[in-house]
Length: 417
Ligand SMILES: [Zn+2]
Image: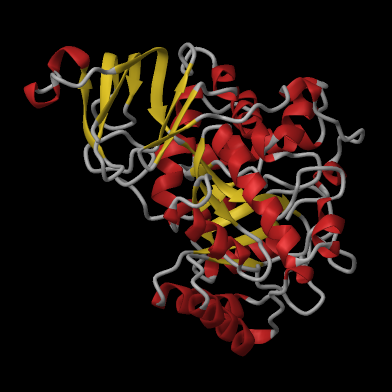
């Protein structure tokens, strides 16, 4: 059945720009058939009554970094470690609904156990469950006992890394996540230490590319960022430029290299950064603002990953990460494009998602007002269409009501994965 959605404003995120009083025509294959001014609707659609909304229709939002298996509560790691795979699967289906309710129509899971992300992805594709279009990465690859080892992706040295990439391919993963550095909270690992050499990463990444997958690195420390970039990584997660003594550093030459190699960067800003900004906290927030500025000045393409699911960062709080990015100096229009077309491009899905154009997946949202004027309207979409099927968003709490982590230093990012 062909469906027409009309609104005061349609943001296409293509060369067409924003259309006043526009319509989106969705065909029965879940694809966009036509986009344009309502007055110009082709005669073939004249008999179909449009569903009309006040507000803005725009491409569905993209989160390039989520963990469906983390619940966004006070201790998601403990929960994951104590749960059976069946329990985890139930939680992951819940997280997927939360993301979709928040308007996220595509998400990349960057750390799940037992290939449960592949199971959830396929269930959503079949229509057995509702959630975003999922890009599954399986368990992140990490040395024995390394950051997030408990997800089951332990791999030491080039041979095991390649074997793990191939095993992920065999099990249907779409992309590869490698822990290039430690993290703040996994016992025995530290964010400033590199976990793999440039040579090891290069071998893993080239094998991922051979299998048609993009490779993403979790990297805080400068050394680990450099190893990943020179190893050919496609995207960096966190990218906090922690120096070898644990202090917040920066490396302009390395930032130039990130830009020159076209590596996408997700700073994993989420509701916790949003809370720090609301509290007027300086320190770490100022450091990230500097990174945003330096990377943008060099033309690095920033994408919107939120690390959804980690401690006190529930999946439904997605919009807070976009607001934080804007508060740190990224123009609103650039934030909106980062959250759609740029993130789509980082997945190799340009033209298929992230923009409203004929032939693209009918993944879009409706929000009250104009997001270009006020990003907060993204907090609660009134309409979510995913793969052409309308989804009634589940209710979820206000951002202001969420629990806050009392500390506001680098340690408060401490639970990142
Ligand atoms: Zn993560």
